[in-house]
Length: 204
Image (cartoon, rainbow, N blue to C red):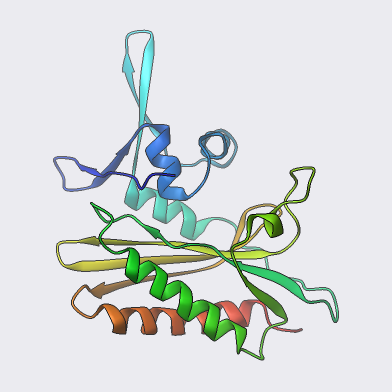
């Protein structure tokens, strides 16, 4: 899915025009974000053009919606190990210039969570066959997804721990860092995420 291109309105707010760009920002299909708007109050705006209309969304409103979305606790069955998929981190920077940072964060997450004794999750890189059963239904488990976006010298990193069967957000991490220290940013954000997400998946 293509990284979304932002437009800035007169107030300096980052705006995504059309379902395709909104879906790319949220790392979901257009069908899913349309359902979220209809059923879960995803903040999407409409401009009327006679009998038709166009849609747009503000990045800050989408982030706020994600952060306040219902977080239900993880209830791991006793003695059961679950799959934790580490999805590729999306580079939302104009021109896709920070793919190396995205991959660096992902590698740090895989390495750190694989060594973490606190959680009973079995860490796996993203493999499509692990995510879905032959009938197309999502296999029970968890995933980490997120994005990196740089603007005006600042790097914004957002990571979400989600439950795959219902796409529910369990825990999130958002960090705003100086773009000048990319390696330090990778290590620092991954360390924070490992601590927070491992605690959410810890044994009872």
